[in-house]
Image 1 (cartoon, rainbow, N blue to C red):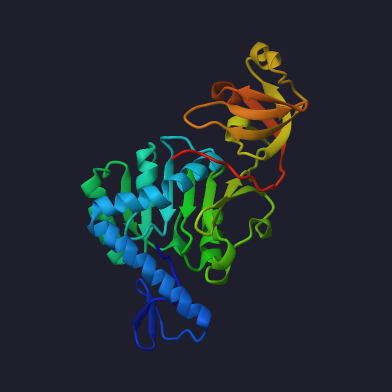
Image 2 (image 1 turned 45 degrees about the vertical axis):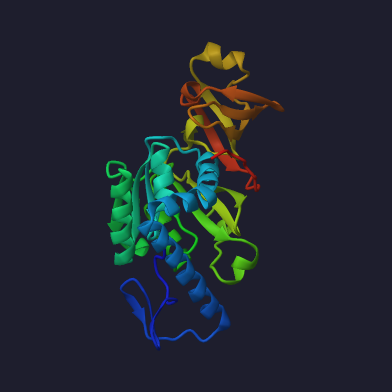
Amino acid sequence: MVVNGPHTLLKEGVYVISTQISMKKPRTFKCRITALLLNAVKGIEELGAQCIPLGRIHTSMFYRKMIAKEILLAGLEPGMRILHIGSGRLPMTAISLAERGFTVDAMDNDSRSVELSKRVISKLGYEGQVTVLLGDGCHVDCSEYDAVLLSLHIMPKEEVIGQVLQSLKKEGRLVYRNPRGLFNYFYARVYPRDLANQYSYRTTDQSLGKETVVIHNMHSTSSTVSLSSMVVGNSGTILSAAPISQATSMGIRPGKQVTVQAIQHFGGPYIVAIDNRSVAVPRSLAAKIQIGKLGDSHETECITASS
């Protein structure tokens, strides 16, 4: 659940997250409330890990719809390999992704969390899809993953995001959760617009005081990408499309401006805007359409999706 941060009370005067110990005692009301919140989350997760039916109820109530929106926003496809950093004692995100056909590495730097997560994964029969790892998000290599997902509670969030972006492969996605509303006071918020400008991003509000941010790593030595590698909000100029007859019949021609409006789930088409009209482009065709001069509107979009 937590990657780093001096907010969990070990004993008087000593605060610990996993094996990283700080002798500096939090002195502010904010730190004390944050510690209480983190301990409460840990307690709920441990209870859910010990009682699987209760854990399933918790996952269904608070995570499945949120994760469905994140999958849609990031344009993730079943079969992709995903790293979840800060997976916690009840790996709800990893379980929900596995149920949808993804291969997941669930990482936490707390040995108790790793121990409980392995038990849960084994009981639910997801050993072939979910691997639980003991590791530190500040030193992780993300180059082999199609997407990396960060939990709301990870600390220090900016350092972890920086490490992920530094090692994220071309066209990889970073999905992280920011606080909203009152939670802004207790948890770190990282604004995507403050990151390097080679990254396109999208955001959507979630329930329970959360916001999801998706950053798409489009930085590469090549000036072109395929339409199928773009995410919602990306725009660019069509350079080529094949087969020409099918593309032309849909109004897809070199020189036209195109913007991705939506990506239908479960293998559905890309919905793109061309000449002020919306066109549904099959994924097989989207992979053959080359786009140049990629940009992004950076507008917040609220996406609804069923669990």
